[in-house]
Image 1 (cartoon, rainbow, N blue to C red):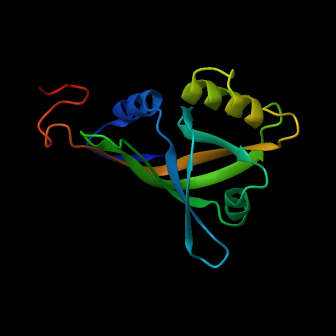
Image 2 (cartoon, one colour; image 1 turned 135 degrees about the vertical axis):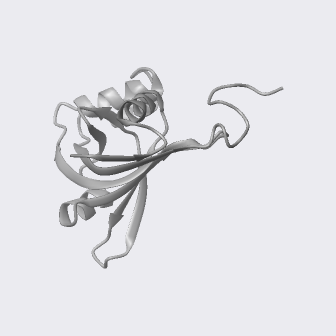
Length: 154
C-alpha cells in the first residue's frame, strides 16, 4: 500500500501523473552499490508506474539484481510541482509492445514517426518496468512562486 504525503492527496497525485507528459527520473543501484539515474517515459495505471525499455539496457540488469528504486516526476518550468518517492520495480516481457506503444502514443501523439518506427521494430526486444510505489511525497510551489498552476503572468 502506498503512503501519500505532502501537498496533494491521492486523487491529486493521480491527476498530476495522468496529465504530466514528462519523463520519470528513476534511480537504481549498480552492482557496486552506487546509484544509477535514468529517465524513462511512464504511464500511471492501477496505482503503479509503468515504463518500457530495451531488454538489454543497463537499467534492466540493475533492476533484476536490486529492484528497490527512487523516483522523481516533476516539472521543469515555473511553478515547480511534482512527486518523488520510493518503490519496487518488477521486470516482465513486453512481447506485443503494448506498454511501449501506449507510451509512444502518450508522449509522441501517434506511432507515425521515425523514432516510433525504430522503437517498435520487430527485432527490438522490449520489457515492461512496473514500479509499485511504497511512498509518494508531493510538492507544489504554485502559490509560493506567486501564481496558480497553469496561470499566465503579464
